[in-house]
Amino acid sequence: MAAKIPGQKVHLLGPLGNGFPPLATGREIIMAAGGVGLPPLYFLVKKSIEAGFPAQKITFISGAKTRSELLDERGLFDLGIKPIICTDDGSDGFKGTVVDFLKNNLSNYTKPSFYACGPSAMLEAADKLLLERNLSGYLSLEALMPCGYGVCSGCAVRVHPPIDRGPTDDKRDYHLKRVCIDGPVFGVGEVIW
View 1 (spheres, helix red, strand yellow):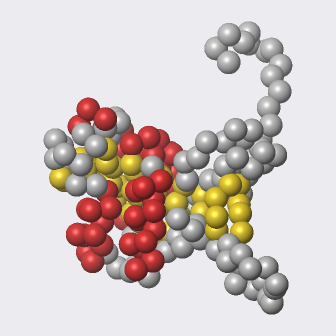
View 2 (cartoon, rainbow, N blue to C red):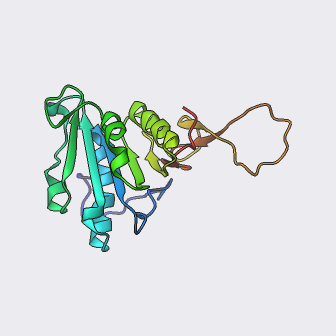
View 3 (cartoon, one colour):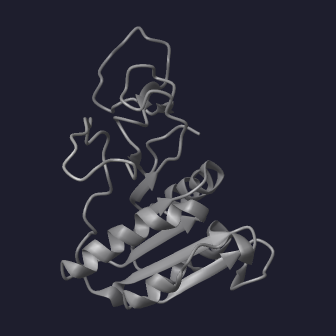
């Protein structure tokens, strides 16, 4: 794109997939970002605050393996929220993962709504924890998307079948959804890890 001349035509396909739904009004919000999961959640928070969502109702937890792998969390302070930093090795903030922090602190919240983006291992652990605690939320999956628009199914993930699918002879207890066009955002408890 940098090599394009202003006014030059480009062909685009999109938007594809889905995004996070608007933040649930009247509820406490927990954002959980692992590594490169920070930017999508940052923009969701920024847009929500600009639309009038109260910044004080948002907890933003950002984690990485070590301090040197953290992204620029300073922008979160500019939004009026105070981020909680987690590093696996304890080189900055809470010593442990984002999920470790959640295990120790979820009881401080009353039925929060949860939004997460990060590596699969983090999302899987968060999903299981939230199901255990009967909490709702959304997970944005990271996946290799060979074609990016749903043709190859290279990014397919197993999900639970719809509850209302009725009687079937199909022996499978799951069906597939493509992260590129059916996701990347899935509800808590939807993905079969």
